[in-house]
Length: 361
Ligand SMILES: [Mg+2]
Image (cartoon, rainbow, N blue to C red; front, side, top):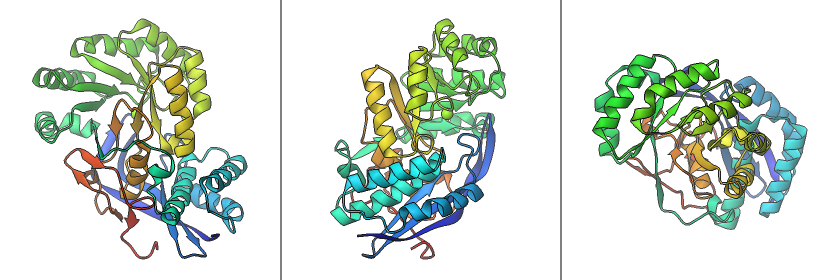
């Protein structure tokens, strides 16, 4: 079976409510849907989640890179997992970074292979048998500023037991919310994500000292992404465990952070690392070096979330920070099943989610 056609569709996904954190406030997700066609009429799809503030990618850039990758993909044979690995290696050598786009391409390739082998993607990769995962609840700046108690109560009632608060904007309000929610729910895991908010170790420490009484499980990305020496210093000076997100995209970053003793945890994301193959290499490294790891995402339609749910079977993640469909207005994908904060692992062959719109397929 050979690939005959490669198309990137500019896909702008509207959110129901704006989603603010330190580096951006999102109302729409400017993505590209990658569609690959074959001479056996199998069609594969994948979502490129182009988070310009994290990976530097944009819709225009991704579409241009699809043109560059087309000669490497067109005519390629897909029969085995080794074929897919070889194609991804060729694309990775020819195209630096562009990890969200590579994730979309890899998803489309494995979607085709899964349909060909009559297996869901996670089964091809040897993922653990899981029926579902329970997602965490992440609270945006807007949600922290609004009706915090109603939202927290709703998430708790629906089964969420890990709450993540975006911090770094209004520390008085944030501390107020965090301590209120902690006193309401002594049993939940509370984590914080600063998204690079603080310019110095001292500024980060000032905030973290004030929140020490709230039993915070970890602080995610307190400093600017390149300041990995600062992360190491903060980790040494602060009692709250430190997680890297924007500082850690690929295995190379992870090795450097580990060598500096800069992290307790890392937030692994497909769009940052380039796909499931690199994710597995990073999980293996974390396991060997006793680094805890979470599975995060960039906010997705069902197409991107489906790929993340296959990823969810591949390791012992500390938490699953994936997108519930109620964040999205007009999801262009379908096929996933949710029950409150339970997200079910797709079981049908391939990706397990398809675009609703026939324009794509
Ligand atoms: Mg983060």
